Amino acid sequence: MTNEVSIKLDLPATHQFLNVLGACIARMLESVASELAQEKYNLELAAHELCANIVDHSYAGDVGSIAITLTLQNQDATRRLIIETRDTGARAFDPTRVADPQLDVLQMRGRGVWLITQLMDEVMYRARAGATWCQTPGAGWQKQIAAPANENFWRVSKSF
Image 1 (cartoon, rainbow, N blue to C red):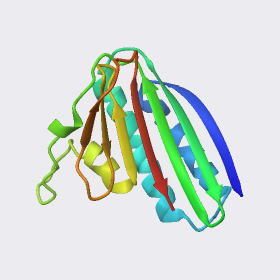
Image 2 (image 1 turned 45 degrees about the horizontal axis):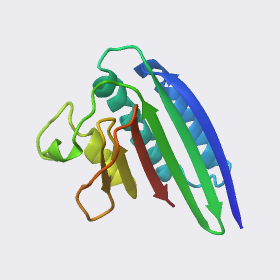
Image 3 (image 1 turned 45 degrees about the vertical axis):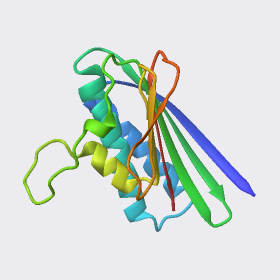
Image 4 (image 1 turned 135 degrees about the vertical axis):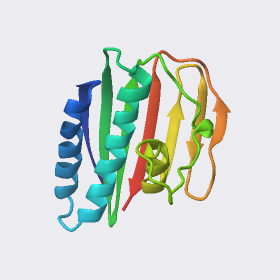
């Protein structure tokens, strides 16, 4: 039997509201199991990095919002959190051009996308320009061409 709950948020594209996203994820996970401290932290971190990148890079100081859908699927002993974001920021990017960080070098920025791919099972990004990239564990980014859209779209998921 599958049990599914979704929460929709529409947050201003500023850092000051990202804590609302983390609080929603924490509460969703607490509703299914209280022993998920590490998973909760990892999922909150991945979601925060994803939205921080939208604020910093897609909008880059412009006014806008991030539409977020959190879906928690609970089927028998398997749980899965799906995070989807939509934004209308003018700046799309090619994730294959983001170099993996040098982990042995102190780096203040540039680890967000890498961290998201390490913490999540599936990562998909569709740029408003019409390209879609997907990544699964152990595989690099796979590029597909799609029709141009009026928004940038991320979908990341993790089973636990």
